[in-house]
Amino acid sequence: MSRRYWGVRAKVRGETDNPDYEICRDNNFVAIGWSELGNLTKFSYNTVELLKQKLKEEGFYDNERARSKAAYQILRFTKEIEKGDVVILPTYPEGPIIYYIGEVLSDAYYVENPSDEAYSKTRREVKWLAKVSRNNISEKLKRSLFGRGTVFNIDKHAAEIEKIIEQIK
Image 1: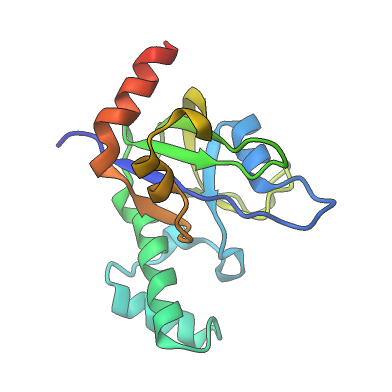
Image 2: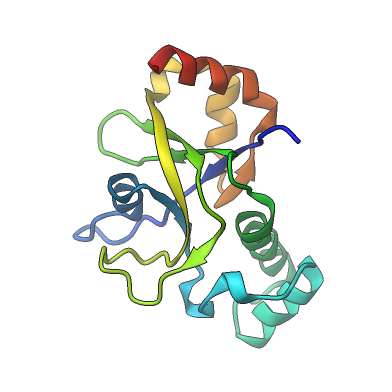
């Protein structure tokens, strides 16, 4: 199967904290939150329904829709993304928005006490391939990357993403 393309948003924390996207960028990984649930890679839940039930039991989210959205994103990150896939990590600086494009090098793993102080403990190693300004991508890709989800598929933009990677090399 050919590689797939994903957006992965790192947690933006308080004003005085380093945002997780900076920690991810500087330490060559992408990560997701839900750290209160512990090691997300150990969940044997291969269905959204089972994970939604776990989220409900743990007191996460007061409605079914929010639990469902979270369950889908957790499963995408831990089960669907594969080695060799491409991820785009958006940043949220005060200046122009930058996107880091990387190749996934590892399965999902968990770091109990990260020395980098990131909130996000469920991770995947990444080799960063390119950096591109929001101003240098198509409107369609901008709209796809502007979504509110933590993990989202952007396969429909594969050709544009590959072109960006090739231009940077």
